[in-house]
Length: 353
Image 1 (tube, helix red, strand yellow):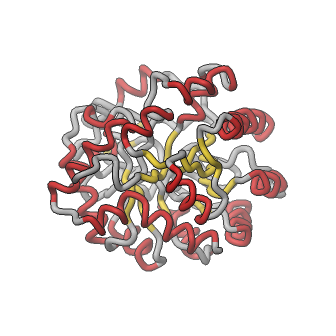
Image 2 (cartoon, rainbow, N blue to C red; image 1 turned 135 degrees about the vertical axis):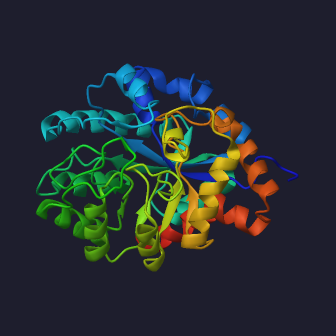
Image 3 (cartoon, one colour; image 1 turned 45 degrees about the vertical axis):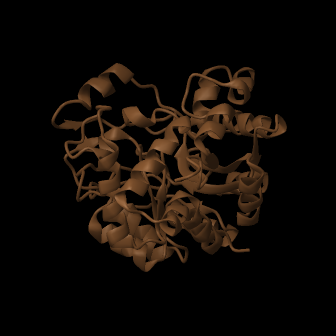
């Protein structure tokens, strides 16, 4: 490749807003512009050819991180899910993180994109193109009034759950080995959420839904099925990964999957250990391409929210992934599709003109 930063990578998931929120919110926003101790910021994006992606707003649960990390290096594990979070507690956190996203736009660090045309134009300027995404719908009330307001503010993608249960559905615990078929699917509130998202043109992210919820969305949504950051269960039998049967449904809907960089979902043994060769990521990409086709696979890094392979610790490292893909034999046309073209395709189908 003559230019290691090309094609630009548009990414299915990051958690940088959560990191900035924890680091002080608006006070930490300047570090995104000048450089920070993390995976994504403006200087790293320029170095690595990171064009943008889905910027997740996420309400964290109280967690014992050391316990989680210690458990997930074992040969098998089954972490208990956190308790549900009430709307009254979730809403101010979502507002605070969304405000950070708007602040970054005011600082000219990124552009919040509401249409695919916005993304296309922003990618050409070299500025970061950001989609306002919510991971876990705790801040959405049963009457969906907050959904309407957040849509007007720019929300264009939502995951009904982040693993822990919400009034809309149920997710998957961090369990290995395990299938994603581990409980009930969407609630009546969840079915209404899917219907209204379809009407508004908000993409529904299936990444953390359990299998029953996945099939509920498949039955009730008219839009392509999309998992922004999930991997192949046939390679890594983790509860968070997608079975071949699920991949077949995504293909039939003309949806797509973004490859998650989180090591526990990449490794055959499901362990949260950073020693993962780039060839293991290519194995997942090959499997996804085989089952979905070349037009339905992209990248969904989970940057700033997960332990990732040692070679890819920040978006400045993305040229290494492009080089590995090119060495494997992916031609220029496929590289463009995997790096950003397929995301634009599926978003056009989901959002409309």
